[in-house]
Image (cartoon, rainbow, N blue to C red; front, top):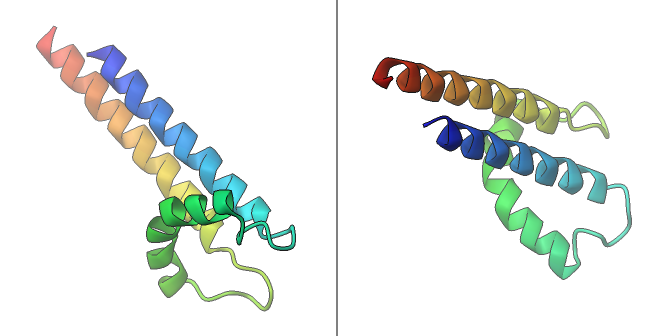
Length: 91
């Protein structure tokens, strides 16, 4: 059961890295228009969209991805604790 928790936690970490890569792509011209950028956008934008609706950009700075990363970290921690609790309960 612990292996399942580790795999899920690792998937959260990979997704967090993908979000960071997507954020960094905004610093380079036409990076988001490349095929890789469009693929990453299809993965990341559905998650970032609700945060962008709630948190407006501050001038040229969009802080919604930072809040989204914090929310993802909290979700990762919560899922990890639930999986470990279930594993402890079943043991």
